[in-house]
Amino acid sequence: MMDWALAGITLVAVGIVCRRLLHFDEPPADKTTSVLRWERESIYQPIALEVETQTAILGVSLDEALGARRAGNCENARRLVRLAVCQWERLANSVTLLLKTLNANLPSTRAIPPMRSMRRDHFRSRTMAEFVQMRDLLDQLVFRSKVRFQGHLGILERAVEALSSDLREACASVETLADEHAPMWGCLDPAFYDFDLIIKETLLSFRAFLLALPDSALGDFARDLKVVTSHSVRTKPTLAVHAVAGNPGETTSGGLNP
Image (cartoon, rainbow, N blue to C red; front, side):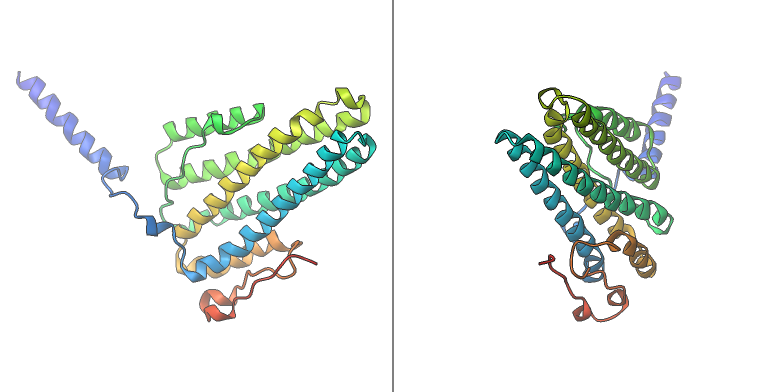
């Protein structure tokens, strides 16, 4: 009897220690914790607007290509798809650069807020099923928030690469197969849908990263982010490094190119 009691007490003690080590006893985060202060918002907004602008351009390009095909103008549809693929590659490059920059600056952060799970039924393409399973495995086996976040960034980066590779292969089929047999036309919509979700997950990760970045590292991080907007589709990025340590009123915003 004493052995059972001792084992029970030991189990409870181990459970308490594990809860404290894994921060399970911490109160749920208040909604206000996701609100960025102005100096962090001035870093986040220009990147988010750049990525969202490029995503909107890609969506319009793909819609025009599909619309031309539905209208029976297959040759024009092919040309429009080629233009859309170029825009996809440009956007994929921007998202990949952002993810790499987050990963490179990860050692400067404090504890990263937990990221929401990516559900398999949220995606439409076969490619994403594998990456959602990888994320599930990461959630089960990794407990340290920073290591888990690093793995999450890696999964997002590989997902961008895989979706882009699938699109290239599908578009190559247009050049070798008759239009009605080309698999590209059936994969454009689900591929873009999943790509858009990955982009949203990337921006959520970017926001979580900024919440965990100390004030002393903001300036260096903002300078590193310039590579993302080096070929901006906007007239002038709002990424003002001087605003991190200066006057909030000095931050300016750009608009779309006329």
